[in-house]
Image 1 (cartoon, rainbow, N blue to C red):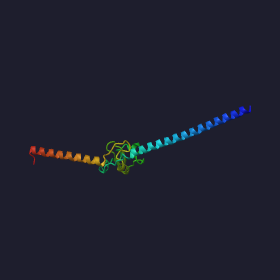
Image 2: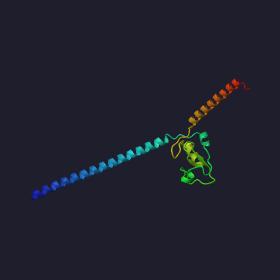
Image 3: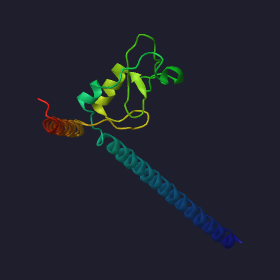
Image 4: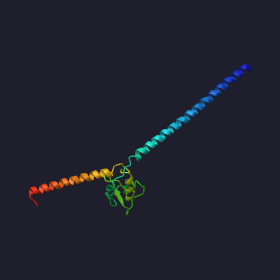
Length: 162
């Protein structure tokens, strides 16, 4: 009977050791998986941040200064929640500027500070021209104006206007 008891105790001790080893291994595995998941999340966060910041291109100064300045009552933001940048209401007497493509309006100070860093609308991501794009637009406009002037001179010569 004593042998049976000792054998049973050994089996019990072996099972207990296996259970402790398995629990330690599972805890180690869970810890490893948690660290791996945290690392993946950090990588995703870093990639997301990089994708945002590497694409930050300022709007052209000429485009910023040329934003339409609406009068009170001309913007939907007056009714629908105010400036999406600072989250404050638009009020009578403040200066507003309106994006050309989407017509979203913001406090002048807010949108100027935004566009100096990022050329896209903070609400819908419609882009403003960058300095390089603005330069090309200006060159194209100048070329069209020269072409018009040349056509006007040719027309005047054909008609005989001095």
